[in-house]
Length: 240
Image (cartoon, rainbow, N blue to C red; front, side, top):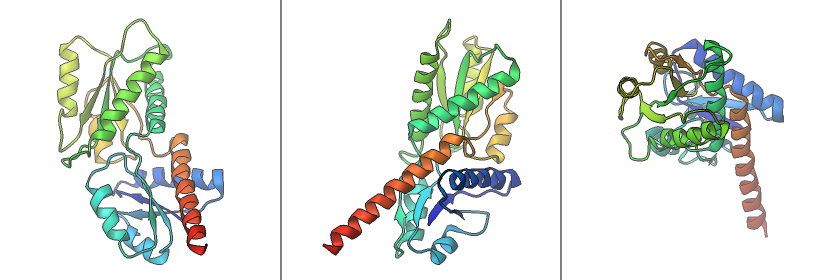
């Protein structure tokens, strides 16, 4: 069984976004994907793995903060579940974010692009918890450079809580430097209070969350298939 470990949200649109991801996974592979929540929503991750104790658990998290390094391993302790890496730093995340950014730019006009970009992550006070956002910003910068254009586009990481610079600070800094079409690329998975804050930030445009982008389904399936292959190989060795 494939289990997605997600944060959870009281916002109904968040559940709908995750449901589109699980539907895409199932359509692409035939693998039934369950969702276990770390907070707010049910079923909890603990409830799901209690019912399916031999699952492959993929953390649907963009950073390696407290949830990834403490919460999820604690829940899985004593089960036979295989825990994969999260999604932090994966190039497919940057490619999905690049696609979402282009969609957001097209909403402002067919031939208009941002002159600066902020990659906005949730933020973490845990060491290493913000590395995913910083890596994604560097990868997105490389993708934009590859696109070409008359002028280079600065790409800055910023955060919504627990780390700096905060998104409003990054916006103010870029405006002071003369940039006017500042796009916020949301390094977030689903709608919620963070996306609401970004939409009210006054940025020129804000991209949509990432969970239901087609590249996410492929990335999750890659994690799942790799973990299953490792488990089968380990079982074969034990049988020898």
